[in-house]
Length: 323
Image (cartoon, rainbow, N blue to C red; front, side, top):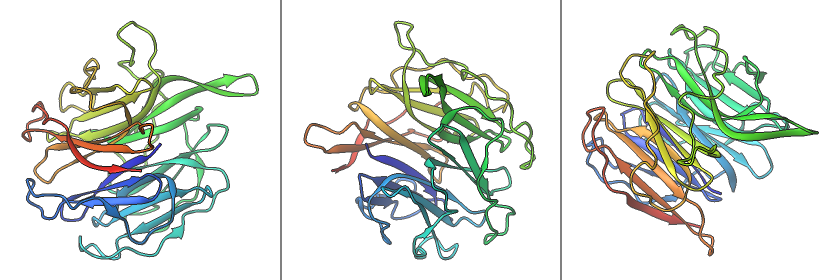
């Protein structure tokens, strides 16, 4: 299954990366929110084939990309300067660890990046930039607290800047762990970037259930911040259906709306997704379909019709075919 990720460049444009299994990329040709996008093309420098990708940006706007190789080594590259069209550094191993996968990048309220990953016992690990200085080191991998078996699927930011995480719930089962398929969530207790995280909300409220009332098996999530600062969350389930919920208002403590299922007419069975905000404040969403029998998958996108938080969404358009 391929993976998608996106990050904001220093001038406000978004860049998209796709791995299936080599890394492809596309970005908008200008800051004009209606500008065209470059066709998907091999990303350079190439780290080789990868199983997963995630991206974020430094306080000065430089984008950074991580790729997990088939050798289970996590590598990273970043923009050489804060100029949006600058080149990328050569790939290098990121904080070597023998047993971490499924990396997810997020942003603290002061602009520093934080990364989460999971080991084979579904313990969540994390590392973060030790200061807002662009070349500051990373803290080194430590187990995430509050400790809870799970696999982080997405990170987003509340309207007051606090990051929020969503993870797939795992519970002990015999000699290992099994997933219930449901989501749990945690977020910073205050907007201070050094504050503790709240205990995991298990399950995330509102819980995502099938129309018949059974539990959906959540496979991937993406979060995006609307123009008023409120969050919107998407989840795709094991049946390939795309669902969404969002904060009822711009207040960081606002409740989430009931899940809308499905989100827009189905573009096919969805396997992965990513979201970002365009320069004019509109959210944009990309999805990758579950591979067809011939091994190919479609990348499709939709975006808000206007920057208004409750604006409608465009019909799906095709970005390209991979595989």
